[in-house]
Image 1 (tube, one colour):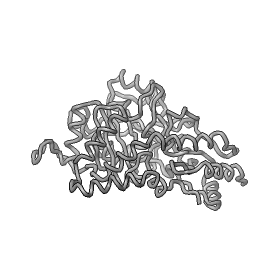
Image 2 (cartoon, rainbow, N blue to C red):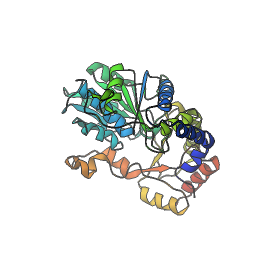
Image 3 (cartoon, rainbow, N blue to C red):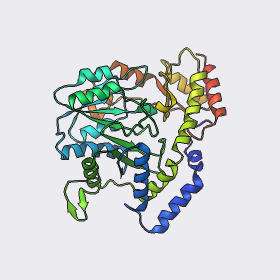
Image 4 (tube, rainbow, N blue to C red):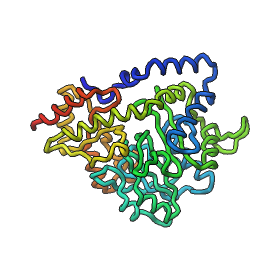
Length: 368
């Protein structure tokens, strides 16, 4: 069996250092908001290229707190519009509705699978306050045109960087440092994954960072003094210690993903398999390797029978989910087609080139 992502082998790559880091936290007797958090936040901010990193409980909370802070600061108010990709994991949208903001769903380009800058421009109204870009699948979604639109209209650019740790824009900036603020997820399967839930916000904005740190700590900036109606959303010391170990290897782990992806691009050849446009390695860290096929379900069944594990990202688009039933009648044909045809192939830092070759041989031999 070729697993989609072998987390046991991935963890074992740096297992001894991880165990040592966890043991140090356990022995310290300090399990929240201690030295491990401070160290990781400093290192991750330096890595991303921002002044601030605020550790939080998970990636969804990271996005929620960014927009909640903007509301608390008076930058936005409930009812304001935020442009967001229609093709995304639902967390991107939940963060907006959680804060009473109105998501404006914009279609992606089929060749890139990322939000279409031309349609972004058409979606801007007098009520638009922000553009939320999502670096989906590990691909850089930022374009210079999106940056120009934010400047022209005075919009906050927020990045959902949950799937793109280590990715760069063409100008060399890492995703997570391009916008006014960025939310990160450290879910175990991410390129930088914890051994449980975890998340962070990165930003250069001093006021925003201070507000988010308070909101995620019950709304408190000083013990037993509460400025905001916050919640408990903190990155624990053990996860921070694990992440700090893995951060040192992130670029090397991403290079292994890129080598596997390059083999896929160079050798996958089947009339019923379509690959998104290939980006330079720096602009794609391949959290997921998506392919498109009009016979997706049959292909997945065939791969399963051949011992290749795949996943679908994602089977139901946000606007067709029951929780957003008010959108169920929307027609977003590009998004819908992507969700009907997308299939994610195995990829990860512990995957071998022999396994990649086997996946390619099996797909290229697929006969309907």
